Amino acid sequence: MNLWIADGVVSREPEKRSAGNSTVTKLSVCVSEAWQDKKTGKSGERKLFMDVKIWGNLGDAIYEQVQQGDRVLVRGKLETETWDDKASGKKQYKTVCNCEQISILTVRAPQGATRPAAAPEDLYDNDGSSPPF
View 1 (cartoon, one colour):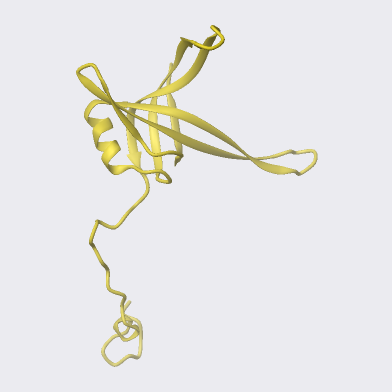
View 2 (cartoon, rainbow, N blue to C red; view 1 turned 90 degrees about the horizontal axis):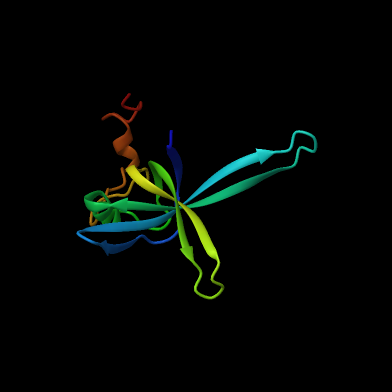
C-alpha cells in the first residue's frame, strides 16, 4: 500500500503551472517530529520537507486559498521522480507526494470581516450580577 498522510505547515508559497490539458499546483509541507533520547534525556525536533503536487481543480482551489505558514493535512501517494543532472550527468532522485486529498487546517476570518469586541457589561445579565451562563 502506498499512502502518505501528514499534518504540516506550508513552507513556501504555492506555485501553479500548466501540465498538458490540466494544471498542477506545487507546494512544500514541513512535518515536525519531537524526539527524546531515552539514555541521555536529550530532546530535539526532526523536520521533514515534502514536495506535494496537487492536480486539476483541487490544485487550482488550493493555489487560491493556501499561503506559506498555513497548516494543512495531506493524503496522497509517494512517487520518485528521476532526471539527469545537466552539469554532472548523474541521475538525480526526488520523492514527492501526489496529493489525493488536502484539508486546510488554518482558520482565517473572511476578507473585510470585522468582529466587534464585546464590552465588559455585555458579558453579564441586565443587572450586572452574574455571567449569562
